[in-house]
Image (cartoon, rainbow, N blue to C red; front, side):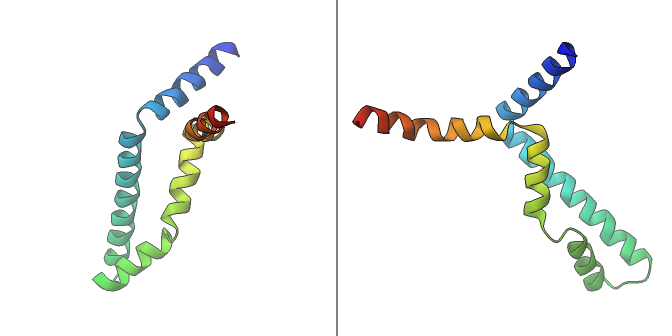
Length: 95
């Protein structure tokens, strides 16, 4: 149990450290799935425009997909605290 928790912790800390690369990987993965879906639609007889529209409809909210994927691999609370720390320090110093 402890080993599993430590493994998850290491994975999530790594995700925080390599955020840009992971973001690119996620974009690439979504683009791959869009292209595959578009190809499936074309092979079933749809023209290029209809296939592209159908593929985009399948992944209609890319932002939502990306956000839910990010939540699986990172600590939302830790990221929030980290982003708010500079402002809190400035406020504390001025009080």
